[in-house]
Every structure is written in structure tokens, then in C-alpha cells.
Length: 232
Ligand code: 5RP
Image 1 (spheres, helix red, strand yellow):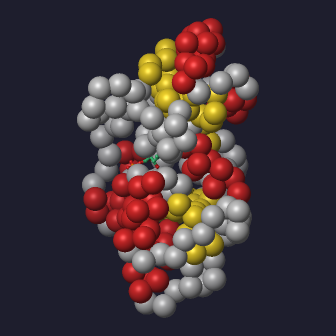
Image 2 (cartoon, rainbow, N blue to C red; image 1 turned 180 degrees about the horizontal axis):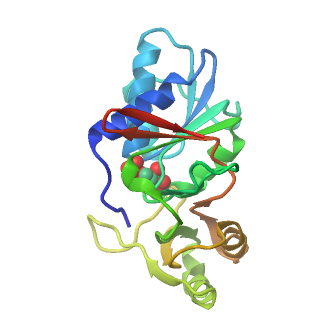
């Protein structure tokens, strides 16, 4: 499902820019993926320099990295995030009055990522220029209960989508999420109305969560060749 991404330098710039807006005393949602990892590393350096922050990881990978770089962790049971920082597979609608639309879930972590982003006071997206699009048209990752895959795939086809069960890259069989579910990537072509599709897919029985993030992003930090473009 992963598309080719930007350079490490662009991701590092975006991550460092987002880590700079975390304030002393904040609880910060820690996203998943290579760009979010750049932000977690930058936040770890700020912790080394004395920043008081607690992180809420969105995946096994982000928890491991946060521990490695020394970010103290907490859970949604104990605190709601002041800020969440996360990457995206595609970002559309930058510069509009309302928030940009995102597709997430390339790392199969979108259920917890959406929970943390929605709970946060401020959701900061980190991206490189390869993620920007005029309209969302990437396949939408959909986390599905394993028993529900055939029924959900049929329902997605009836909605005009082309569903594909995500296969694991390094072993036979499907990708299994941190929550023990499977992932269906569904191509819809250019998505004219992400909010309507979000509602349609989100109400299918057996769908745990999907990767359309509509109305959630407060700002987007895009690492470019010579700096960072921050939207809005
Ligand atoms: C994981 C995600 C990631 O944030 C998304 O796939 C972007 O990853 P990367 O920064 O490595 O391109 O949604 O579920």
C-alpha cells in the first residue's frame, strides 16, 4: 500500500518543525510511520534538553521508538493529548478555510491514530511534498474484523470501490493490525466528497476504522528542500 515517499531530509524538517510546537507540560500523541518517527526523535532530543512531555503512542513501533529516545509514556486512560503529531499517506485541500483531508493507514495504525488525533486539542500533520494532492485518490486503508472481510469487501464494491486485502510483505498471509484485525485497501478513484465516503464506509458492519481523516487536521507541516511550509 505504501507509495514512494519524500527524502529523509524533508521528513526530518517536517518532524523537527512539529516537535518545536510541543509545549512544556504537554501530553503528545505520537504518530506512526517514517515522518512521525522523525518528529518522535526530535521530541526525544527536546526531552534530553529538559522538556517535560508525556507521549501517547499510536502503535507498537511508535511506542518502541519513544522508549528508545527517552520520551515518558502515558495512555488515554490517564490523560487526553494536548497535541498529536502524525504523518499521512495523502493530503488534499491545503490552503482551504476548513481543515485538509487526509488518507492515513499505510502503516495499518489508523484506528489508534484517529482515536488519538481526534482526542487531541491540536492535530499537527507532518508530510513531505510527495504526499500533497489536489484531491484524495489513493486507496483508503480500512481495518476490518477478520470474519467480516467478505461482507465488507462486497459492500465496498457496491459503493464503487475496488477492495484488496493487504498482504504481509515479509511472510505469507495478511497484515494483522496491533488490534488483531485485517486491512482492506479500497481504491475509489478521485474522492469528490471525502466526508460522505467517510460516513458510508464508517457505518459498514465489521469496519473497525478507516483511513479517511476529515475535519481533524489543524495544521500541516510540509518539509521541503530549503525549509518547512506550514499550513494554514
Ligand atoms: C500509518 C500512517 C502513516 O502516518 C503514513 O503511512 C505515513 O507514513 P510515512 O511518513 O512513513 O510516509 O498513517 O498508519
